[in-house]
Image (cartoon, rainbow, N blue to C red; front, side, top):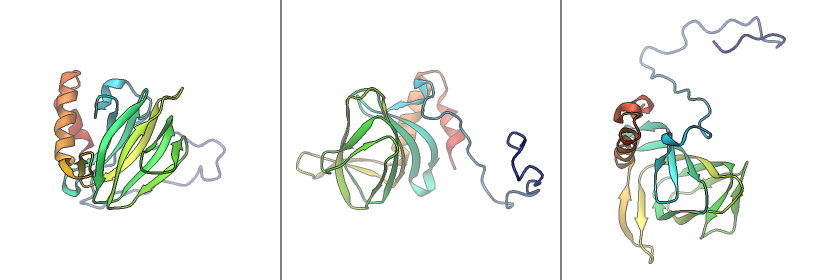
Length: 177
């Protein structure tokens, strides 16, 4: 139960007794996800880190906070599926688009889009919440596929990082659904 209501009009409403259907999965609740200790942020590239929040291997899908504390780059890549992003702080964009995202901005990336993600120098670190479905196909300078990263590669990267920083490789298992 959340904290007790004091003056809210709904303070006398009782919670639902049987919240979950018999085969429902567990919720994930993690507080303060964007400002957490940096050990929870997995190096994604040399200049950008990712904090996994929820991962579904069966759907090849994950949610994360992408962070760059200074100018950063996620190499050219292509998404065969849609991606959603919400900017929490800082400034970022794609070299291929005419917009620059800042705190409060929402981005929908259409399936079939290739781009180069860049984070700008800014007083606040670039932090953006992403929902990623499917693989990232890495592109060379001509836009041709030269590698990929899917949810299984992401999990491996996270397990290795969490083992290295002392959280244990199995820390990530609590985010799997």
